[in-house]
Length: 171
Image 1 (cartoon, rainbow, N blue to C red):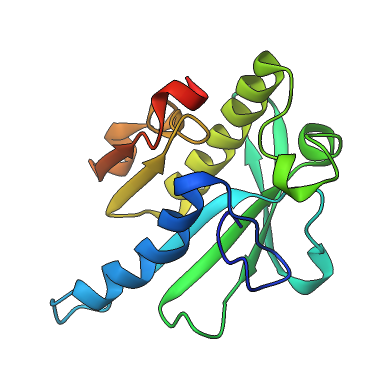
Image 2 (image 1 turned 90 degrees about the vertical axis):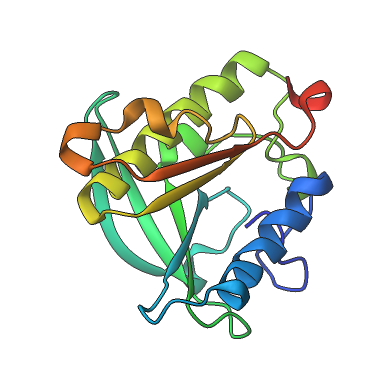
């Protein structure tokens, strides 16, 4: 999880780490409707995460690239109403980035990064298509391709927000 630096899962990389750590809780705090709100925070399951500490929810088939991803879940104690989902595929993430967590989301090869994040975006889109959602908030290019993999006629039209945290740093 980008953010959650106080847990065994977390790293903080720039401003995005702070936003991803704090925004879901603030969204819940500001929510005023009577219908319950559930927030899913979706991210890659980087290889330095201890998957034994997560709950395996399902394996989802991603049809565009012909891959399957294991979807793990975790609830942090301090976050009621927020579920963190981690997407893992050994062939995509098994050698991705450095073993040093602070460098693991930005590999040296930019083309490998975009290919990897495109496949993860497609997997998360497949999950959202299967389970539905009302809104999607994307952070930077990492998962910014998700809307391109969604079948809008089948899913409806969830609201989408794309936040670019530092365009000069990540392109």
